[in-house]
Image (cartoon, rainbow, N blue to C red; front, side, top):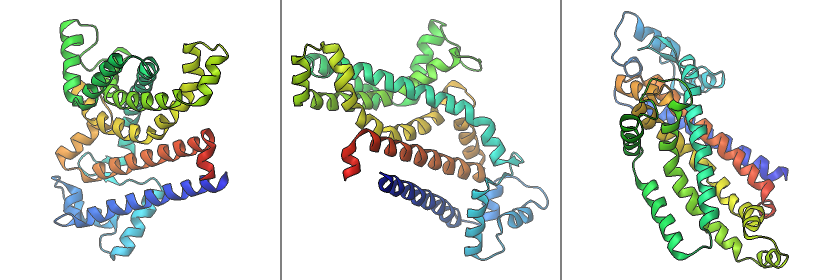
Length: 305
């Protein structure tokens, strides 16, 4: 059991190293001097000399790379020279609103997928066709368009939820629904396919012969077999939620990493953009690795492979 776990941990470290190295190479390949790129449009005396000293730009390229790795290992993400604040402090102050939105949307997406998957797996073809059509529409519709429609209907017309700037759970409902619908469409489709394959297995016939009800059969036996692909897609779900949060937070006027990222891109604040990319890569790799290890405990066949 320890061998596949160690293999996945080493693979995740390799992916993180490649992500960090790619970010360093991309920074070096940008046109122009690096100190000018990091400074953006900001101009004040001595700033570029301070950037050269902080990033070690007067040293050789291998030494710069090692310094870059060392700063990241110590949690030093640099300084936003436009906002004149450490990047780590800036991201730390905006991390919780984004996590709150992503966790709420992820939980809602999984709940919707389970309800739809259990209700439609192995049912009448017409019901499956309706569910598949709704899933395709939810998956293919842009997030910002869904958010605008929800705002027009539930905020402008019915006044059920605030438009923006409010505090509390009511301000979280519409952004979470907007972000959850595309993920729920894909997860429901995958779960239904996996459950339909499980319904054809011999143990289902045995369970029915023992008098188990259809609802109990689906939730106690079939759902457990169908959840494995959902767990495998967890890494993709995290990436989709982090990417969708950038647009969703802007549409609904919420604070968070999405708003910080868009503002940094507009202001050409390269240190902030670089830190957000590296943080997203770290979160994605960490959660994907944890889910891979969870799958090893759920399915013994993966350990044998």
